Amino acid sequence: MPYIRATAEVNPSRRRGTDEVPFGPDDPTPSPGSPSRTAETKDERFAARAAWLLRVWFLDAATRMNPNLDYGQGVPGRSTGRAEGIIATRRLVAIVEAARSLEASPSWTVADSRGFRAWCAAYAEWLKTSLNGRAEAEAENNHGDVVRRAVDGAPPLYGRAGRGKSAR
Image (cartoon, rainbow, N blue to C red):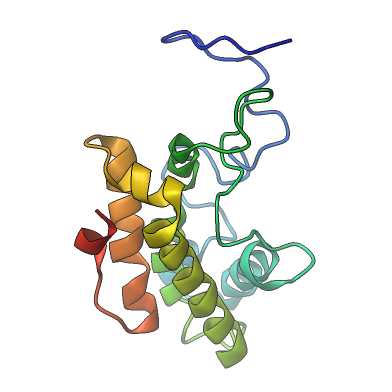
């Protein structure tokens, strides 16, 4: 069945088979395995769990998310991926910031840090160079803000100045 776009109407199957829910709700309360909980409690169990989650999502070749959204917010029969899908990763900047709190943890190795930085660099590069990333960076709303925050927010983790303005 073809999808028909209608303002303020949502396809009921839009979240089926996506990563949007695993990235978490809009509730900012940290979960027990979150890096921010580690910083609050200084409990290494939280750091170990957070490091494991970061490895699953960003480092392990069998399970990691690709550092692009080529298929983000695809619409069957219309598009394999759209620029608007980038907003689903709006929480990535917070994940990058939280990962910084693991740098002192024995659960987060130098190799983990190096791999995560490489993933962030590849994602930021995709945002700056892909058609979808460039199109979304031009948006004058929250969608454009997400791209600019990601390009500005990720580079400090791997030692570069933010280049959000160049994403436009």
